[in-house]
Image (cartoon, rainbow, N blue to C red; front, side):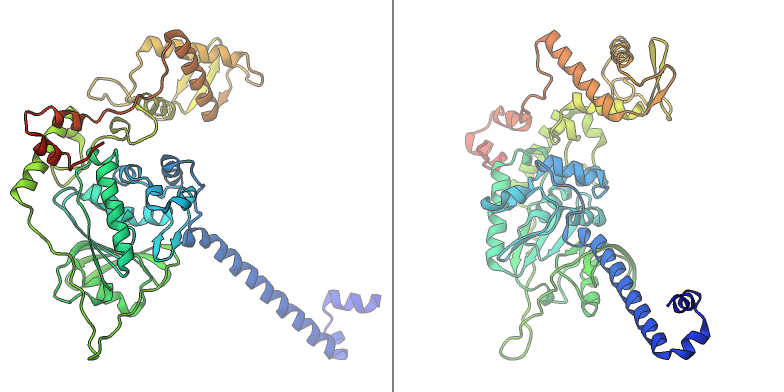
Length: 471
């Protein structure tokens, strides 16, 4: 037996000639091992992509803002416009009440015909569409209207926001959610909104002579044979985002017959429903929502609200979005779109500038890899409102606390983002004790609403300017 084992280990050819059945067995074993290895490797690949296909790519949040923070940290949300839109609309508002506990998980959700994609998928779609005010947008498979409503916050009042949905009950659900957003959402008055319009029908039955759009999104899996059909819905220079053969794909129309294609991420979508033919054998057509010119009364409401908002924002209006003087609103902390107020935002900015703390004899030197921050409109560096004396006192307090903590030698360099956050919390508690005031953001005041109510106009006209919002 020892001799046989030795022959096997050395792979002696004469042994396999003497025992051919052993050679066959060895080859079978090697084939099984290779097969198992390939299966395990493929399973690992599928598992790595499953988080993006079905969601679960980021941690669940405690609330909508927490979910957006997680999407930003994972780099799914990369632009300010997209972040503002996501923060303005609570994802849980589009869930049925009994399922709201699952709203802040990065997972798709379906109940009957009602469906929402995972937040990471919507983030990639919004970023890929490259939206800005005044564009026309078509949502194929508009569903609950969650995506269309976020898009409308960026398009502004002079954009076009159309959707087509296969199920009539989902269209009814979408209009209910849209009406609730306009009447009750705190975010509505912070934006100039392009209200979406939906029609019932199959998106593969759009007449060929229909208008083309600047941006198109399809929320169902598209097969290769329908790719050209989707492309023809685009204007030259437009962008189409759709799941094409298990890949979320961005297609840009660069000319009448030229295109640029980019694969974004692997996804898994239900396929498009094929059209049902009528009794005479011809497919029916589904007209898209009509493009209606706004009435003079509607234009006056838009202009009055815009004027009041601009005078409210002051100098902040100079840095608004591109493409139109009617843009999407103010900065996140100023507009109250983030759970933290301006004070907390300044602290985060300050922490980003302080990359390392150099502990020396009885002093802390804040060193940074970048040059001095540019002056803002108030001649403050880096957006900080603290003066030099306050900064010096804070650094001294940090040093005194740090000198009492073990494991910190003089002259050592410490990378300590979490420690700095803890120290900031301690500072806030100390300041609260000294001033007797809580350093928490106060409830935001809807200045636009207050200005409209203060106008010398009849009450019916004021309510019209407020879109009949009771809140």
